[in-house]
Image 1 (cartoon, rainbow, N blue to C red):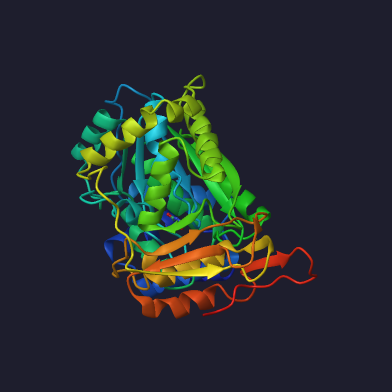
Image 2: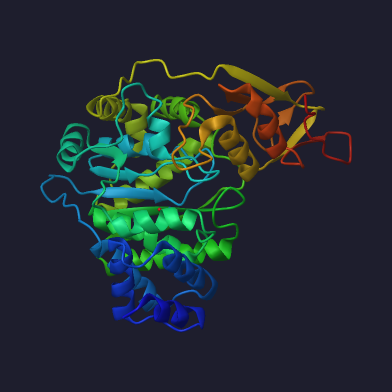
Length: 422
Ligand code: URA
């Protein structure tokens, strides 16, 4: 078996055999197949696709590249959620403790920010003392103590994906449905959850920009989950405007705590409850009432226990960025545009995300929204506040918000207008 003939097969539109897939994934993980060969293969897969049998085998080979976790010692059913990534998508933070408060165990392996999309681990690291890296034993201890754990995947879990994902990120090969589906599902299946709810984002701020692609990704992932005995369902949810009123690490933790305290923006509460119901249903707990667990404080109690068990202080003040800059409504009217991708890029440029893999993120950086599309605004009222520790970043962030990404349509006028630059 050799890498060049495998690359040629896919380059010429052929289907890879199970033996070819097993060999190339294993050889790449061990370092026998070089990065440049795997990037050529990833590009051929992006351009020519894979059929169902190839995707299933590729996923199985990625799972087999590492360890599988086992939660069978827990006395509750396990259930998990995965979002394909968006702007202001902090749902995991209130959702995991909420579902735990309803009687399930939530072993949530999460990731860091990717491009313009935020990462759950980066957000939680703004809580003083909180640790993302746990051993398997520590993970089980937190699950027993709090019913939910949110942490980084250990090095032994789907190592083929870790290597391939980093390569795809720098070779323009992220946006391939077979590669995204196998990447996400290999980690979730290896994690050992009994049930899985996929939140497949669609819109400008998501990796899938249109409904057809999002549907195909959802169907592919649900099929893979079922093949491996994981009860899997998918929701397609809108990512054309940011979720809630905050995008950025500590800003999103603050909003999540508001939701756990019974408040928070309506769209965040609605999606949290919808996903909680699906997770509980898939875990065999259809009668649990997540709305009650939010209202009676039990979800907040599980959040506090989870944060404390991972070394964090749930009462510590969250970091605040050193500098703020507010954009105001240029006219009275209705906010008609607030583009998720533009807000995500602006938050990223303010320091909420990374330019390179090894960069640190700023805990306080990001964007606070004061209005949502459809809201009536008056001239001079705040629309967005930009937060950063490094004010030289404002210019770049404002450039991302230009070109009608944010627009107010005046009540009396025919044309929408964007907030003025400073
Ligand atoms: N998230 C993943 O884990 N993998 C992808 O390929 C895309 C998003």
